[in-house]
Amino acid sequence: MKKLEGKVALVTGSGRGIGREVAVQLAAYGAKVVVNDLDQEPADDVVAEIKAAGGEAVACVGSVTAVDFADRFIQTAVQNYGAIDIIINNAGYTWDNVIQKMTDEQWYAIIDCHLTAPFRILRAAQPIFSAQAKKDAAEGREVFRKVVNISSTSAGGNAGQSNYSAAKAGILGMTKTLAKEWGRLKVNVNAVAFGFINTRLTQALTGDESKTVNIEGREIKVGVQQSRIDGASATIPLGRPGTAEEAAGSVVMLCLPESNYVSGQTLVCGGGYGNI
Image 1 (tube, rainbow, N blue to C red):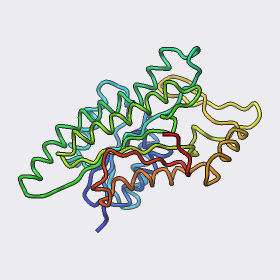
Image 2 (cartoon, one colour; image 1 turned 135 degrees about the horizontal axis):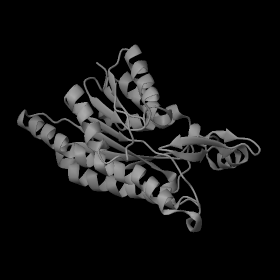
Image 3 (cartoon, rainbow, N blue to C red; image 1 turned 60 degrees about the vertical axis):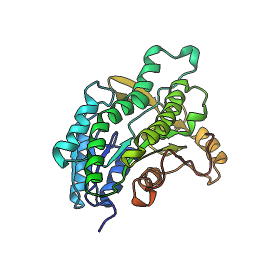
Image 4 (cartoon, rainbow, N blue to C red; image 1 turned 30 degrees about the horizontal axis):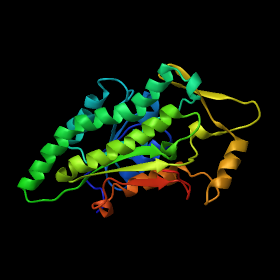
């Protein structure tokens, strides 16, 4: 039997990058997965990939910052699979600037995505977790469920990222708080703080090249100059940025039964580098 056989996992931002890898790896362990992305096509592609490998998945498309998203996301799991066992708050992006040039729009966009959205999702999940815990207790069973919030080594401070650093530090406080609130429900709440991971947002640029992605109608610059990647790699003890597969593996570890007595912790996935 696969270690997550019969479990229901919800993963935000899982149409691409690290989130996609998390969804695919959870499905490989036997979990049924609710896949989320801003856009229909990448979400459907991941669902199809999971099904082609013999797993079960369904898409819930939309922005995690929408006021109705949390309830819709949770209900997608309940209506399709009847339960919630794993929640991964992964969706995110960066929109950087030094503080004197950062607009209110930049500030709130990043705070809303990385901190408010996970808050709303976990708030909406609490009644389900509570009802499931009561049912388990009445049946004399101890069943552990999992929340993994995604943070960053930028939570320790990073020039040009006051919005992102504040949000990623805030999610660590929320993680520790819910670990204490939800221990009685047998819900392990942990965080993974990523260091430099290769994704479309950190792709290498050369010369004067620039790239953007459209996120909720905003053209956001992405990519990092190769010289900066080389400099960052020199500070990483393992000598290189991580891969999306490696980043996802650190998240999935905290969803397995082996982590049942681990809660309120932050795992740094940074190749030996970390400042939190």
